[in-house]
Image 1 (cartoon, rainbow, N blue to C red):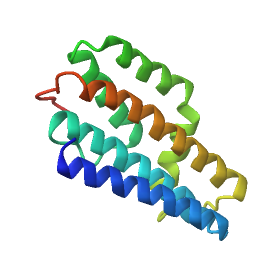
Image 2: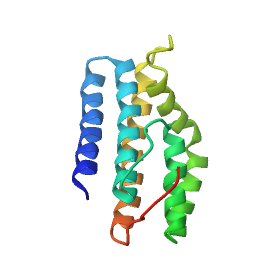
Image 3: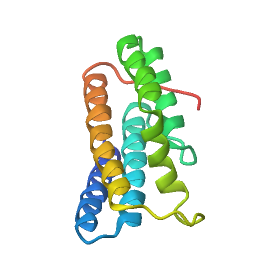
Image 4: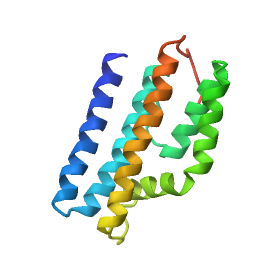
Length: 148
């Protein structure tokens, strides 16, 4: 793992840990925001590890599409297919994460304890899914370039 991507992954993990602490104190909007932010950071770190760069303006689902393309170009078709299925199967949860992060400052939506808990649980599952994929990829040859 490269130094910068390692730091970004650690920041993502700390953001998710902070969300869990804030959950106990009832700061549900911030929990949802941090969970969305953490998943975005973590995915960017994985792309940075694989490509040496990542787009800073795209949402989580867009980053997953780029990650899927990287796996396809590296002839890792099983992993690319897992991402495709994940995008379909977890579409609603991914949208919740994106909304929690992107609309925090421009929306009047308030997150309930149940919604925040659901978002937080899904974010942890997301970390495991992406972490497993990136571990497999890092054990093979890295990608050299990708146009996003």
